[in-house]
Image (cartoon, rainbow, N blue to C red; front, side, top):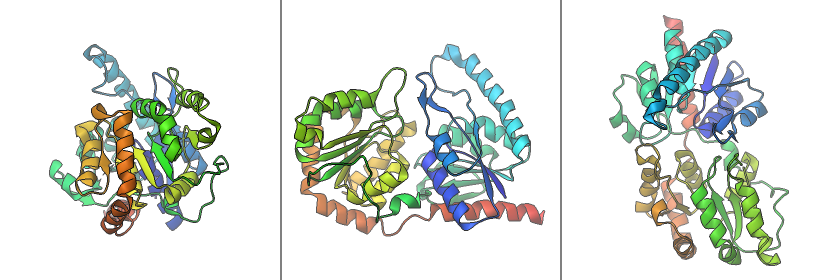
Length: 378
């Protein structure tokens, strides 16, 4: 079977691809994705690099994005979507996939339309507790809608809904990993991992910069700050701030634009705590590795889904939650002190709640295979 994948949410898409590649030699992939995560500022997406590592064909693709910018730009956006639709038809005709598997994002809209027109089976996977705008649209043409959370089924009317859970990269669950070559410190202080996602977070990066002298007194900090753009170079700014610290505390701060899977597995094994946005995939990974975390949800995520992810854990005493409007260096440092005090309690609660690794990839693959079986019967 040939599966064409588009990955608005990259990590579950990669987890699914890795699972199928390991368990089936009969299936192959084509990946359709973006070159830039932010086109205006030329911030590069990780999709091409990560997909080509796996020796899978990568096809660059972009589209207009509804709901962004001025209403006066709507005609231009519609023209971009129409152009992307015709490009999508060309891609499907060229690669002739049996199934199109969407992991969300605005680029899935013209791809779903093209697949439906060409009578190619469509599977939509939703990672969050809410239903994204693109997936809401694409689900109208889908043969199957796969969900990560049972409660999301209340938000969709579709004859074929299945709860698969969210695919998790097995590589990040490894424990016997050596430290990255760039990690060099003699400090025995606990490790704090700070993650802003591939695009980075301006508010998190700024708050960390303001707090860096105090943070590095008690923690060894590994900070994933996001790729540079034409407007900002977070890594360079933070390194400049680092040079203002004492030599002892300078050696306790490591800033990276991106952390690869092997490095991340080591961080998850060694980190005492974390500060992070609250995207579905990051929350799942940190929870599965039992890492007490302070979540700072993106305030304008669709239907406030990041807040809901963090709120669910905070209410069950598995994490801390700060809304972005309340974030300050003082508040962050205060919560880190509380995280230290309650570390053992939070870790025990996470261990009890996350009894087993989600089998999302396996269940999603079974849903995809079932479509192929149905096609053969017809």
